[in-house]
Image 1 (cartoon, rainbow, N blue to C red):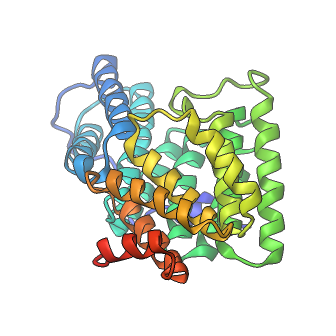
Image 2 (cartoon, rainbow, N blue to C red):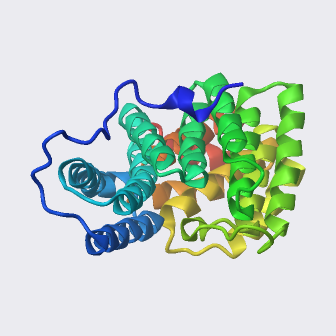
Length: 324
């Protein structure tokens, strides 16, 4: 059975330097790094990868240098590794959103290594799930499914409720992207298990703070996206409409992404006029977002709308955005 160890970097980018001439690192420096990591995480909620890629990589390089070159106690070292893992998860997501998939994969693998060295297997699973999500979305569906399952297996049955729900959500997506009837059934089963895991609430281990965004609403969004990929618009459209009616409009990138799934689901539902209206809104939002993910979603629904090119609303949209 594959494990996360199979996805570690070939070398050891976190090996300590034999001659560490930097300053003595204490809890104060760890707290400073924790605050910067949290700030970058909050920025990622409202800004796209193209806006954040440079500061994210700069923070990651500084954190690695701090860990490798400074002297510190074992406990401080573990805390530094944990913060590097969290930082790598955010930086990897930012790089992926900016379309720098090779760089994102390198960052994610470094983060898995840091989390495992810190013996934080919940965090390692979260980072691995992020990489699995990228693999599934970039033509490496088999690898994505293998890694998503390894993330769940390595974290074990004691993983916090929100973490287990997120692992299972990513397994569901990986099965969906892998295609086929059996994978579709496995995806639906994983979604059910994710909902059950989340319903455990505060039972057992407390979920880490960085999973603040994992809630029932996010699970419904993933469920709706799975239904969209499986061409089941009667299930997807109501779920997406419900989720979007309550969504924070300041999270522009995510709003555009979720609306893009609604546009595709409406195409499948044979509602091209409404699909075109939603697509126009996505294009307007995406025009100011330096995100490769949103750009790719625009390309996806424009291709799907070609089937309705004789519908006036669609024809007008396609003519206006032919370059896309």
